[in-house]
Amino acid sequence: MKPLFAHNPSLNTRLLLALIASIVLFFIDTRMNYFVPIRSVLSTVVYPIQTMAALPKDISDWVANYFQSQRQLKEKNTELEATNLLNSVRLQRLKALERENIRLRKLLGSSFRLRERVLVAELLTIDLDPSYQQVVIDKGQRYDVFVGQPVLDATGVMGQVTEVNPFSSRVVLLTDPSHAIPVQVNRNGLRSIATGWGLGESLQLENLPHNADVRIGDSLVTSGLGGRFPVGYPVGTVVSVNFPQGKAFAEIGVKPAAQLSTSREVLLVLPAKMVEISKKSPDTDTETETETETETETETETEAEAEAEAEAER
Image (cartoon, rainbow, N blue to C red; front, top):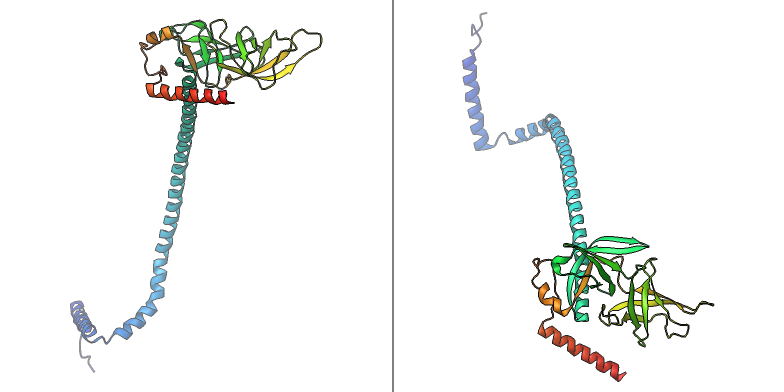
């Protein structure tokens, strides 16, 4: 028996038949939804295979994202650490500026209380050798600084100028053994001479007998004798009173009112005749002359009068 067809259908014929069948099936599925259950079953069967096929790519993406996230976290952490360090430095700088601002306010407030014309200077170097306690400030002949000029900080007398150069000056501190300043006890007006010991921040009162009316806690101010230091500037506080046997004079220790080891800015007291000259100084940014305005002077005088009346009532 001979076969119906001598040869199998050609490739083109097969392709044409497959295309026609696909179109017919697509039309039937679109219009009549006959193949929805079959497609659902096939999707369920094929899903694990699709998942397994996509697993390598998912793992690869996860690993890449993990390492990328770690790298980004490290970069972000490094950036945050640098920012934190920078902010810490800025914060410390702001704190330093805040402390400097407080010191300057106290310094200028002190000049208003003293009602003197002053020039603000800054310490350049410090020499606190026990036998040679002096400092160097950044004001000199250009600002009409002169030998013997009183030097104060925000809390009291620091010393006086001993050497003047064009751009700097040397100041001997109260605690220098060679320095002596006329003082008086603020409580009773008892006068004496305070000299430096050269041992830390300490002074001693000279030539006071055993019966001198001096007590621990007494405040000492400049007496104005000698014409160098105006009267009433704070000098120190009595911290010890001893009456050694066999000695004619008492041993009285005084703690300076000025912050000799911590002050960075100081006041140079200007005599009245120097005020007009100092106004013509070439550097107006670094020189500060504390001139009280009329309103401020009136308020200060009113406060002073009120305090005087209160003292009188007491």
